[in-house]
Amino acid sequence: MAIPDSHRTNFETLMRAARAGDLALLECTDAATGSPRYVLCAVGRDDDEYVMTPFGHLADGNPFELYVPPS
Image (cartoon, rainbow, N blue to C red; front, side):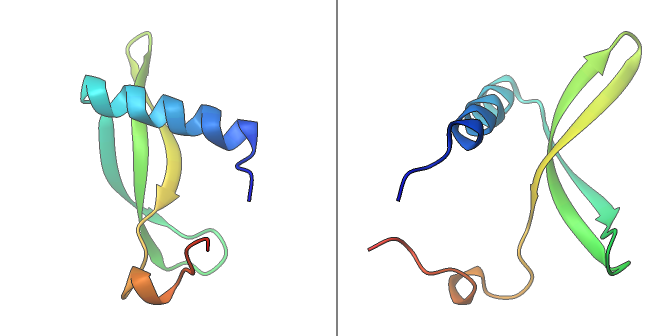
């Protein structure tokens, strides 16, 4: 299974943010359900403003039950 280039690029951005200490975990609201979501974000700056770029949310429950690894 090949990982798309856009996902690789986003992962590299996430890794740079992690190395720089520019990650945050934000409590957000799911746009579809209204439920709370805990979202991993890279933190950037735009002049005096912080910019949060979402990369994904933490899984509810047991994440090992949600995914099947490649074989």
